[in-house]
Image 1: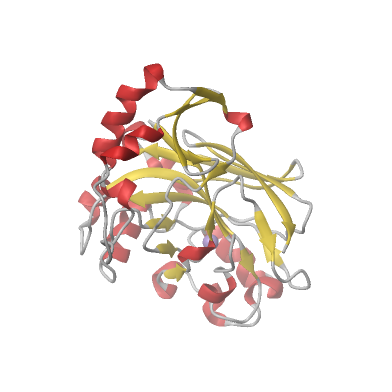
Image 2: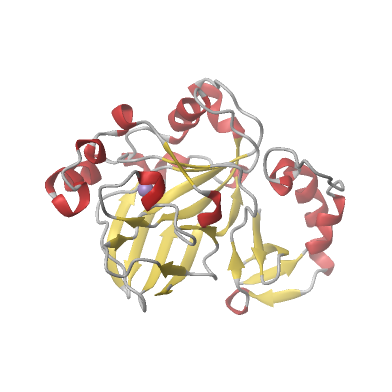
Length: 287
Ligand code: MN
């Protein structure tokens, strides 16, 4: 199932080029009072939401996908976990280009040395919201990545069982200011984590380690690779991250970007595609 959030927080099931409005499925969520539980409420109740959404689809109002504004399918991720330098060819380009490594050895260490990092959850937007460039005088890059959304609480999970904790998959754009500061700072500007176009539930993707991804800017191909080339694969990343953090429903793990990162400027139009997940268009604008 492809689940999206659109317009003013409507819930949709994507069916071909249309969106079925199943917002009424949200009525099954329990009423909440402060303090809220950890995690994203929709993802924490995904099995029940899916069942109710499927019941609503036949009579649901339908809108053309092209006419809706897509938001992040996860509204309230508790964590966004990033994987630095998780493709060999990206490691090579970071080592070769001072504009990417800024003379900082920790910027060009592979993932087994560098570990993972956190992005501010406030940076998460959907493709319909676009990216607002906060420092136009500094190099700001696109990074296309396969993202996965955790479906249930995970702590110290073994690699062989790790994919059973995945609720679904998304495309992630890890927008990055190049420079000498910590990754978490340079990658956490509002709108610098684009998540979309929808959540593809895990049962629709048998092998996340064999997906083709491509990113174009203004129609020009900049990044093209397969998740088969990940240094630390999806299961290994979940196991590794869960050895440091308790993962909660709705936590998003973006798995790292392949080679071809390059600058974006206001006015650019990014198109990102991952096979079996989907395709999204993201506009870049001034702050
Ligand atoms: Mn990245």
